[in-house]
Image (cartoon, rainbow, N blue to C red; front, top):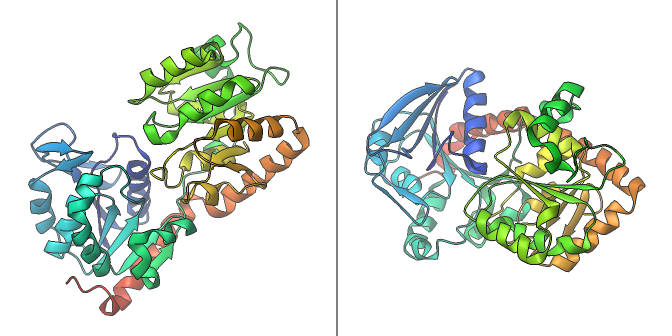
Length: 391
C-alpha cells in the first residue's frame, strides 16, 4: 500500500502530532508499506527530500509562517506529483487539507482530527466554510478519544468517525530503570532532583513531575500557584515560549527553590525520571491539549496522574479515581487538594499505579494503534464510493 501523510511539521520538530506522525509512518513502513510524509520545510524556502527510517520525507519549501501555520506554494505542487493509495491528513493544517481537497490525490482520504483550532481564530474565520467541505469529503475521520466526537465541527460526520486511541512504544517506560540508569540521571541532574546533595530515595520528599513543551495551554502556571500548599518538589522537563514567564511566577509565588527546571532532558533519561516520580501532573488549561501522550508514558511507568477536565482526551486517558485524579482547569486550589489527598494515601497510590500500568498496556500500545489504522485504510479502500466524493 502506498501511504502519504500530510502535516505542517515532522521530526526533528518536537510536538505531540509530529511525534505521532513519525511513529505511525515508521511503523507502517516497517510493516512493508511504501510510506511518504509531506510537510513544510522548517528552515528553508527550498524543497528537500530524504529517506528517514524507511520513510520518504518531503519538506516543501516554506515562504513564511502565519499564526503557527506554515505557508508553502511548493507543498501543493509536491502533492500533485504523488500517486498514493491513501492520503492521511493530520488536522489542523489548513494548507494541507485544502490542497488535498482541491487536488484529490489517492483512492481514499483519511483525516486524523487531533484537536479543534483553538487560538488561531483569525485563520478559522476564513477557513471554516472550506473546512466543512473538507470534512464532508473524507472517507473516514479518526478521533483519538471519545470526547473528541463532541467537537462542533464533527457533529455532521458521526457515521464516519473511528475511535483509534493514540499509542506509543511502551516497553522502555514499563521497564524499571537499572542502577546504572539511575546513577546517570543523578550525575546529570544532581541536587536538582531533591534540592540537597543526596541521591533520591524512598524516604525523601514527594516528587511531582511535569513533562511537555512550555506553552500557554499546558497550564503549568496553575501548578506553580498550587505548589505553596503541596509538599515536595516539582520536576519540570521541557522548554518553550512560556519558560521565562513561568520562572518569574515561581519566584513571585515563593516556590522557586522547590522547582527543578531540567530543560530538554535526554530522551534516554525520561523513563528513569518517570519512575522516580510519585505523581505525574498535567495541569492543562485549554482544549489545545487534546490527549496528553505524556500521561501514557507516566502510566506505563506506573505513575498515577493528576490532570484537568478539558472535554478532550485527557480525562479519557487518565480515569478519575482509577488511574489518578481529574480536576477542573485553572483551579490551583482544586489541583492542590487532589495532589495532597493522593500523597497522603499510599495504599490508594499503589492501587492507582497498578491500574495505570494495566490501562496503558491494554489501550495505548503503538503496535495496536498501527494495526488499527492500517485496517481502517483497507476498509475505506474497499468501500470508498459510499462517502469519499471530493466535492
